[in-house]
Image (cartoon, rainbow, N blue to C red):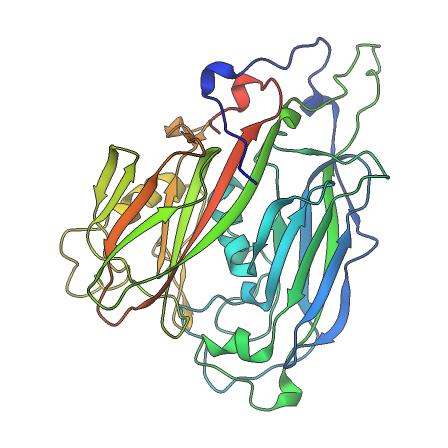
Length: 400
């Protein structure tokens, strides 16, 4: 089904209505979801599925999947910095609309983690939340937020009809899949983790009709007419040192973020894009962007710099901490992950930094051209964060 084309900024219209703004009259609300939870589930050689209908009520911000481990799981080696732990514990993860269409498309837990980290950086890096387990352990723990809302109600979902409920899905992956890309394994089968996944519905509450002084409250969030979706596309990279033209099929909406994740033939994240990346939209060039492997400059320096890193640094450094490197925690400031290339297209209202959404039509041709690095044949996963209007949109909520 073709995506709904997003109009340009000129189509935006204020939400209108008097009284107290919805965002100031409401409050955050959450509750444990009735279905979809997994308790004391041993990670085995087969996947275990969870998910189901989302509790009806309020205006849905997203679903939080709280992952906890109930077993001590020693490993033969420490997990490397290029692993996807603990987010790759989950796979086949999505959020589905009331009509059965996908809102957050089926992707792995790590893809959803990157989407959340780089699409809503003001919420911080989930890898650094107090409940998250770093890559130096094989005990999975963290909270994955499946959030269709952008911020300040933009993209929020009306979840008020018990006859038409949203749903979410996920699976706990196999032992082989969650450890295979890390160079690690559990010492014995009995030490494989026993996990629980608890889901919480996170929402804006429906406000009272009026405040204590009798002033009416706006009953509907202004961001309700702005819808958000996330999709992905996986490319097969050509042989070593060969040219790759990666043409996105994920056009038709306004794009607010694009993330490439390169993996080598062993499905391990690696620096497979060489200098430069040629980015083109129809017949317009968006840049010839330098890129070099992060972390290789510690002693000898990297030729030509890394503009992908520079752009990401300027966009995300105020929100995100340094990455984990090896078996220790880095305090060097923001660094992009190995094999992860982010192209943000949104504005940070507080900092007045960024770019407007990248408006596309179904006929738009967007390509990224790069040469495969040496010994890096494999795949490139493109993850998009998209928005489109379904009615008049408050101008202050566009391009954020």
